[in-house]
Amino acid sequence: MPHTPAKVSAHPPHGPWLIANLLAQISFGLLAMTLCLPSMQEWGAIFDTNQADVQLTFSGYVVAYGVLQLVYGPLSDRHGRKPILMLGLVVAGLASVMAALASDITTLTAARVLQGAGSAASMVVGRSMVQDLFSGPQRTRVMAYIGMALGMCPPLATLIGGQIHVRLGWQTNFVLLALLAVLLLVAAWLGLPRVVKPIPADGHWLRAMLSAYARLLGEPRFLLYVAILAATTATFYAFLAGAPIVLKGYGIGPDGIGWFIMAVPVSYILGNFMTSRLIAQAGESRVMAWGQAMTLGGLVVMLALGLGGVQTALAVALPLLLLGFGHGLLNPPALAGTVGVLPALAGSAAAVAGLMQQLTGATGGYLVGLVPHEGAVNLGWMMLGFALTGATAQFFLRRR
Image 1 (cartoon, one colour):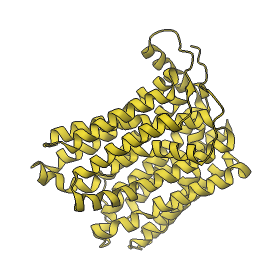
Image 2 (cartoon, rainbow, N blue to C red):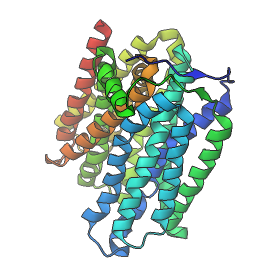
Image 3 (cartoon, rainbow, N blue to C red):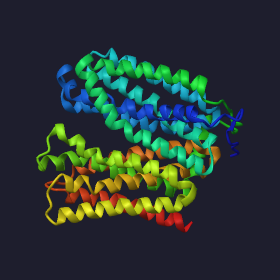
């Protein structure tokens, strides 16, 4: 099936405003996912329901956020980036209003699912536009900026969302998200360059979508890049799910957990920054090798301390500074690789990568609950297993 790469209608200035616009668009989905997390502690009492029903508001968002990327990606390849992006922002904005007005947990859950469905467009189309507008080391450098922005989102969003909840009420978080959706809609319309619509493939859009995915699944390099991304995400989600349990055993309460969990996102941001500086001189393969080495090194040190009987929170957090930094070196080149293998299918490629990151991340978080965590050893082995999977994928990628 023929595909024509998307082309920019004019030569846009690849300046800071364009990059900032793309960063904001891509970050919106993760911001919408995490801004209301502090409110979930009280939704059970507010809506007179159990915590399991409350958790559905989050899992429903995550599932919709991952699955809908599979739809938006091929549609943006076929019909252009901006129309699909703006459609998603409209859906996310309306869903945010619906959530702010919700009077029961069922309505709130439905609103969160729609919110995730709309926000998915921002992630997949934003990544695809990076492929359209940038090339070579510059593309990887922009992916590094994206990694820094995404790394900042969870800690900042939960901090801001909690303060808004206490001072203005939980509904205000959703009002803020609705306003942000409108602002990003205007920014997309005015600030993002128009991409010439690719020549549509023959046949029904669904047939074209399935054909695009079949072609991607037949590309070994693409699959290896996705495997690396999925492994790093599973490692990180396992950490997020298991660290609070381990730290509780070390006497760290809810008010102190965030300071230790922040070790990975902060070092991840630094790793992305270093990638943006190193990629042009060192090259993709070498930077990714450094990232794998630091990731595995941090986990080995954490495990060694745990097996040696060192039962302190710092024995978990400090070695994982290396893991976060390593992921910051790994992810930008891997992201650039996924959308660069077949440029004409960049949207579809970003969709597959996004979905696999969400699915493997959710799997990593779920598996944590299946084993005991009196110390950090079981968590360390689990994280090391995911990391070794990514290292194996990178080994085969280098051989190709």
